[in-house]
Image (cartoon, rainbow, N blue to C red; front, side, top):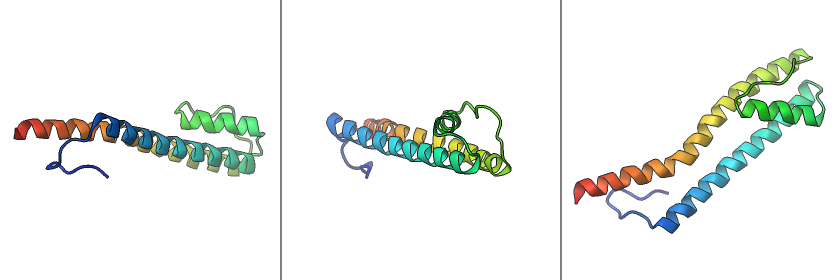
Length: 114
């Protein structure tokens, strides 16, 4: 997917397409994770769709849940989803930063070999 350090750096337009692809993947991952959270809160904690969306979005955003959980399965799901949301944050950050860091390191390597 990425060019080897012996290859020339890709053009700016190709780099922007790569960034867009990574952003689409990150958004799809966030959207799927949000859907998973909404479904889980509705199933395990008997929340309305709007309350489930609010809790899932707040956990994915790193803010924490809104209100108390009403059932034990809801509490277990909330705990698991909170851990999952932390990992998704790291994965999305890596997806968005990887092309930029690769380009930076590639340019530094090219400068060092010239």
